[in-house]
Every structure is written in C-alpha cells, then in structure tokens.
Length: 254
Image (cartoon, rainbow, N blue to C red; front, side, top):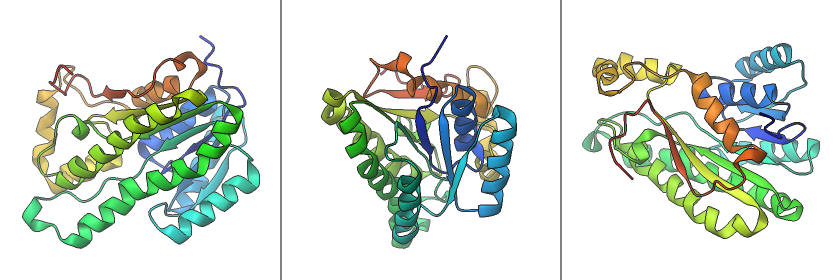
C-alpha cells in the first residue's frame, strides 16, 4: 500500500528515543522528509545517523527543550529556516513524574502543564498557517492510554494528557474544512525506557502485563505503524479520533 508520504515534511517532537524515534524511523521508511528533536544533543545526533543509514535519507535534527519557551522558539526558528511549511506534526513528550496527589507539589503541576499541554499548543500554532495555506495537514498527538482509563500512581499524566486529547478533538472540528486532520494516539504499555523507569520506581507496573489481553508489552514499531498510517494520504477521512495502541488494555466500549 502506497501511503502517499513521499517528500511530505514531518516534524516529530521528542524523537531521539522511544516512541518518537520509532515514529520518525517509520515515516522516513515511507519516504517522508523527517525532522527530529530532543533535549540530549548527543543522543539526537546518534538517532539522526541511525535513521539516515537505515532509510538512505537525510534527516534534520534540532535539539531543544520544547517545554521551555526560549528553547522552543529557537527550535521553531531553525525548523522554518529549513522548511517553509510542515505537512505532518507529531507532538510528543517524555512522561511527567509518577506519584500520588498528596505527594506532588504545585511546581510538579506547573511543569507538567508546560511539558504536555503548553508545548503542544505552541507547536500546533506554529504549523497551522502553512497547513491552511496549502490545504493539507496532519496533526497527531502522542498521549497515553491514561486518557481513556486512568493509571494508578500517574495522576499528573492522567490529568494533563486528557486536556491534550480535548484540544485535539476540538481542533479536528476547527481545522477540518482546510483538509487538516487532527488525531490523538494513545500508547499502552510499550517497551521503552519510560516503561523501564516506571517499573524500576514501582515494580507493580510490571504486573500490568496480566491485564493486557495480548499478554505482552507492545513494541515501539507497532505503535509507530499506527501513527504513520494516520499521517498518510490513506487516512484522509479519519479525524477527531483517539486511537488506542494498547493490546486491548482499555476496557471501555467507547
């Protein structure tokens, strides 16, 4: 199946590792022009080399913390110095700290807002004018299964990621007339460094595998395949959707 991604320009946030990296690789395999981003410049450059070698393509890497206003502005300036318009935006961040409500400070909440919601709003605002002008765009937010079914000990993620999902649903209505689709993809328990760190801090997370109908954790490549399809020409009539890639963990019907 030709996904129609050849030469489409895709910016993937937080893509030096984990799910973001897997998405960047999959998009590059389909012929997209990929721009990757991360806070760790050394790790980002290593990922850039991996993608270029694996996909026989050139990759632009832009380091910077997207939750920091000044660094985000610098990332966007570099991005638009290289590309006039962005066809595909994949928003993504690392996860906020785990913990129960009473153990978290107001600073934790403020930092989580900047990390998850504020950064997403700023990136979307930056790409919308070009997408509207060209009457094409794909905006995909990587959030979490916690949007649909809260996860114990992850109250920061449960709360603020749900607001990102609300933002995406609303944007789907506002931007549909411009042929811009907006979707939310919710990873379940996937074999990334984030999951390993959660298990290390709270070993009970490992028992979650028993709650997954497929009886295993997901692979980043499986998640990336779903995101890449939503970014494609083939997904032109899918918008306003929250797609779970969770092995069946979410129990809700809707």
